[in-house]
Length: 303
Image (cartoon, rainbow, N blue to C red):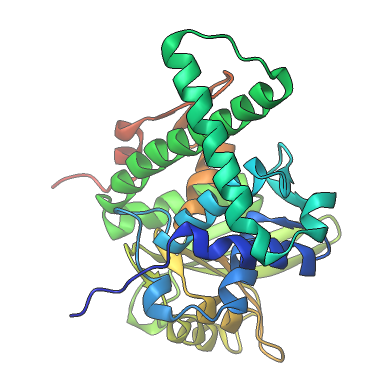
């Protein structure tokens, strides 16, 4: 099988900046990644290439670096909630200017590192703070990769039943009630169901769990939707892998019951949010610890 080449992060600089502008000047990471992938028509094979063993794809990883560089170049900013916004300079910059701005930013980083190595104080306090902010962003990104890698490796080692029970625990924390595992050949891929209550309203929710290292394609979404036909219109597809752009488009296709998608990266964030086997220690860059033994509690007893 031929090796799939993923473009370098420099390739994504202009598409990412333009995607933020087209999305109204701000975007979440997920919306921005989807917009870039659709804008430059990245093939499903390229989207499926993982960075290491995941949780991120190589495209997502390089888009993360593109955002970091665009921030360092003064073209994007980001909030603590992970929302990226275009700056005034980003609104007016041309594609032809990007190589020069990137070179200037790289020169700044090189000078800062040399100054740090020789113990020389920084002369430009404002620029020094900007560099510090970018270093913190990169440190947070690296730390996030580490704990998510550990968590996903732990999930991959779980049995199918254990992973389904873990998903039930997560759904309970999120407010889904009356959860049961269905299983069996008659359920055509539906792993469980429950009832989600919103004040005066409630509706059935069906879920399916996929312990994938790769990408989920649109046929999986269509099959899951078909299994729900006549039983309910709300489905949740949970995977340790990723979803191709085509799968995401199929999940929200007009005229069809929507299917909500939770990929490996989001799954890690949710387990952290609800403190399910994951604890955090607040710092400038927070420490996140994965309790590997915790996930064994979802496994059936060994005969």
